[in-house]
Image 1 (cartoon, rainbow over the protein chains, first blue to last red):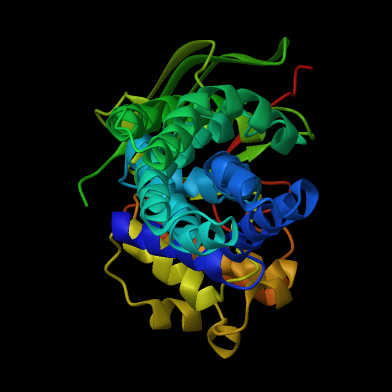
Image 2: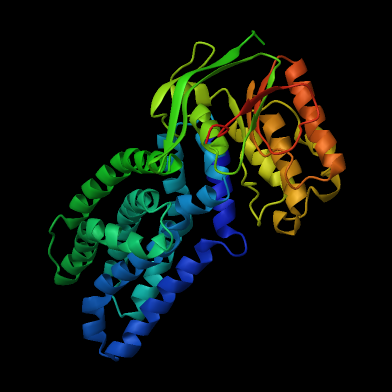
Length: 219
Length: 202
């Protein structure tokens, strides 16, 4: 049952008109635009690379988050899913996983390539990819709370980032901080903190998201 | 299927500061159809959503057999809402396969697709389906759910004469097997049923 929901959400995200390719293209476009604006100073670009790529990744993931529950809410699928044998918490966790597999994971895989464009040294783009691998599940998880809360709001897509971005600040700080530390040749434990943050977000968010969805189903 | 019944006692429904109904009590036995009637805005859909457990009633109780908790009750309910839940990107076969796996249904999909007359277009994306065809898809999904209590919101809307007969036959078959149906409708269901008229006093 969980598998059915996971596969369907992945299928919807990757099929024509889905959000997976869109998020990836957005990520690449933002990451390409910044060097054009900043100029070809490789030293400077390498310094800001982690921050820019992390912010771009978070924004790209947020792009598709507002549809996480909303598409199913609008066409009545969510009512049917709510009455299925799965609990709403399990449904939320499954949808978060599907969202991460179709946005966070591809963004992570693409990031070393974009890191190269920013003139990051090889050891740094490994850390960049690792930090995204650890941190992007938190983006999907915390985003799901926002998606649940803004479910029945028209233009909820505009309010969602306002709700979720402040919650995601730690992920950006630790994620970019880990890469920064590698560039400076020091060890600051940012990856560990990022891991802790991400774990807490992934474990707790399904409960909050499920409560938010239930609230909106009653509306 | 053990004999089951839906009991609603002294139910009061309020939506957005407006009283929809007060002290509503009724009982639906296994094999019975309850037709919910009344003007637009009388609270038919709200009552269905209360029975399904989506909306908490302002007062009163709803129980299906011994199950009075909304979560438990929900696992016995087959839902046909007024939205069609047909993803434009997916084909009817894919939609049914998903819900069949989600609900752990045992009935084969192909037979149900044929029964509702969608076998010819089973592999056409739902965006090309008409409203009536989407309703047939919803009927197929309801049958696959295998749940004893069917809650239907406007089951006949958008269907052609043939489709209406099909829906009526499905409901009759479900009841003959000991199932229960509560249907909000503006049309005659075409079978013997109990009637509950909402909003008559307003």
